[in-house]
Length: 116
Length: 110
Image (cartoon, rainbow over all chains, first blue to last red; front, side, top):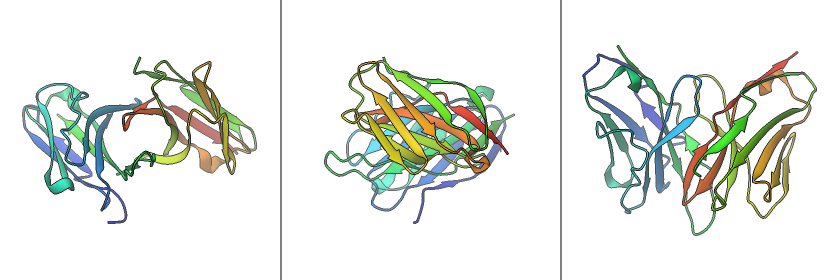
């Protein structure tokens, strides 16, 4: 597609429920990232997929968070047993990579998650 | 060592003025320094970026100044316009991963 697509755009869930957030990256972009943006805060790195390499999960805040990327394209971020502190905007970005060139991230518009 | 510190947190500038946002980093392994612009309800969008072997890069009204020895870089917005009102993030990249500053909310008054 023309841009990074995220769904749903808004999600309200009850504390303790599991949620799945979806990201469709730009076709051909081999790198995919998830970030979290809390109200008035910067972007917190969560996880990074690059091609067929093992993902960099160093930013996941707890074992309730997991993500997968199927077929090198679509990615799903799953949050189990949601807590109120998980409320934030979850942003996905993708990037074309080629040799040593540095191409900018293209972000989606995010999923606003509210845990009540 | 992974942090990128950004200031100020908020900035009000009159139309036609110069907006200046500053960032500092610690890790000398960072190899790419982009700035992103974010409007409410949207994801951040790449504005301009620089590599550490260049001291300045200009694109239209936007200029990045980079001081490698001081480990600082800044964004200058010349002739600021109300349409520039947004949140600006600096970032630094290492091994393909961006670390972002905390953001600066810019308001340009007409």
